[in-house]
Amino acid sequence: METLLQKIAALKILVIGDLILDHYIWGEASHISPEAPVPVIDADHDSYTAGGAANVALNVRALGASAELCGIVGDDDSGQRLRNILAERQVLIDDGFVSPGKRTILKTRIIAGQQQLCRLDRESARENYQLDINAKKDLIADKVRAVDAVIISDYAKGVVSGPLIELVQEAAKRSKTLVAYDPKPKGNVPFDGVDILKPNRSESFELAGIKAEHHDDYPAAEICESIWQRHHPRYLIISLGAKGMLHSERGKVISRIPTYAREVFDVTGAGDTVMASLATAMAAGAPIEGAVHLANAAAGVVVAQVGAAVAHPKEVIEYAASHG
Image 1 (tube, rainbow, N blue to C red):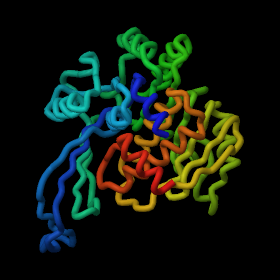
Image 2: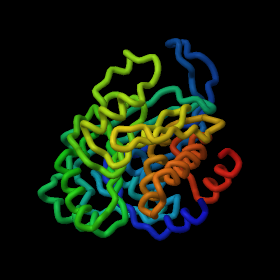
Image 3: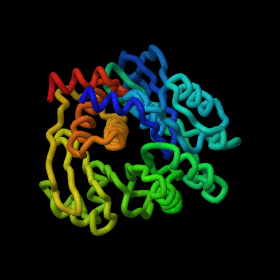
C-alpha cells in the first residue's frame, strides 16, 4: 500500500461536479427550549470545509495527487470562502467556473457533542448550476486530456448532465484517461460505459430499477446484472456501509470486501473518500482489488471522525495495518 500511495503522489486528477461549502456549528445541548420541544444549543464555534465534488478534490489532494475542480461557484461570500479553502489545500479551480450573481450552495450542520441535530441547506434551483457545455467544451476537454483520471461527482444539483459525461468520455478516450462516476440516480442523468461506477446501497437499487422495499436481503446478483445491462460500467463498486463493498464486472459479482471500520462517528463525506481513493489508485496502476482495499482503509479513517474529513497516506497505512 505504501508503494501505491507513492505512485499516487505523481498523478493529476480532475474532479467535475457540484461544489458545496459545508458549514458546521459546534456546541453542546444545554437544555430543552421552553418555546418548543427542541434542544437549545450553546454554540461554541463555527467551521467550514469543502463539500460535494470539492470534498472529493480535497480527498484526492490529501492522498498526495494534484487536484483540479470544474463546477459552479458563485462570487458571493460563501463562494469566496470555498475558493480560499481550496487554495489553502492547493486544489485548483479555473476562474472560468466562477459565476457572478449565482448563489454558492451552502449546507449548515448543527453539531451537539458528536451528534448532528439538523442541517440547513441554502441553494438555488438546479438550472442555476448547469454548465454551459457549448461555452466550456474546449476548456473542459483540454483539462480532461491533461490529467490521469477524471472523477465525476454528482450531487444532483445541476452540474452533471448527459452531454457533460459524453464530452468527458470523448476527450478521455483520446488520451486514455480513466473516468470514474459517483452517481445520483434521482438526477436522471443518462450515461454509459464509464470505467468506474460507484453507487452506494440505495443508489444501486435506483440504478438497477429495483424497489428496495421488496427485498429483505441485498439482491447483489440481480442488481449487478441490471446495472450492467443499463449502464455497462467497466468496474462496478457498490458501497454497502457496515457490510463493506461489493465488486462487480460485466454484471457478475466478483467479490465482497468487509469494511475496515471499527468505530463510526459520522459517515458524512465517506463516499467522497471512497471515490477519490478508487480513482487515484486505479490511475496509479493498481488492480481493482488493491484500489478497493485502499478505499476501504481510507473510509475507515474518515468515518471515525465527526464531519467531512480526509485521509492522509500515513493515516491510511496505519489504519490498514491495525484494522485490515
